[in-house]
Length: 358
Image (cartoon, rainbow, N blue to C red; front, side, top):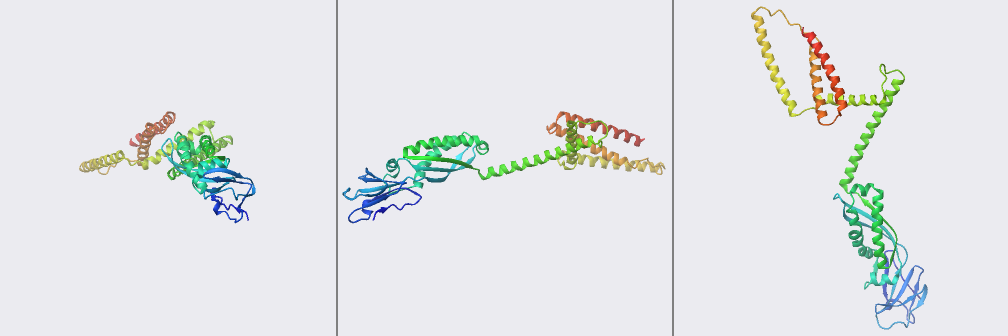
């Protein structure tokens, strides 16, 4: 009965001693279409058995005779390359997928099997790992920033081609044929979090842009239907007005949100001024009482307090707007228009307050 090589998918080549091949009167070896059997004597190739069943009895003497079986079918290798560093010092890993097949069985016997009895896919990866990571992947990745590697298809293709060229040279030396090669870079955890934050910010910006665009469309539509009265506004002016309105809303919110040390200082000074004012009023009331004038009360319009509060708020709006302008959060044109509007409103308030003071 002919001996048949019982191999696994993980095995590429195996050396079998003739003494392990059964047969009392004659030793026969059966070779399939995707296999090559090399008869070996004293470590040197003696013969190559053809496909089918071959008889090898009488060819050998001693115990150094063997048959090297080589699997020529396509092998798939998936491995991970770790410890790659980008140009901006980001550590990344890469998933590598390769398909290969034996092209020159005797080269595989000499260069890879050597003195081993079994050559596996893992053994071949260990031989290639240094070439893949150190000589091919690492130098190319080091020239690229992580954003270019992750987001740039052309960059990833460039890296893949550069690594594949180096790999083919090494495969040829080993007697192997590289059928396909693919590399996929994996994001480090902190970079995934950064991309998520960046995506959330972009989504918020898109929502805000959509909202503004819808408001602009509505403003234009209202103008066309006559719901907006007065001067016909252009689309650009409508957008500009909305921009100013948003800044005004931010400024109004800033009145309540400003909690800086300067605000605290202003509050303390205002409290001291109020205490002084109260004392002066007390002294004035005492003097009026001594003169018998306590029954004559000063005129104080019911809305005077509201005017003063509105005037104080307006001053705060002006102060916050100036800070935003100095911090380059609003442009020159918007700042000038807002200040003109505030100055107009302040003048009107001052006129009303003077009338009420008379």
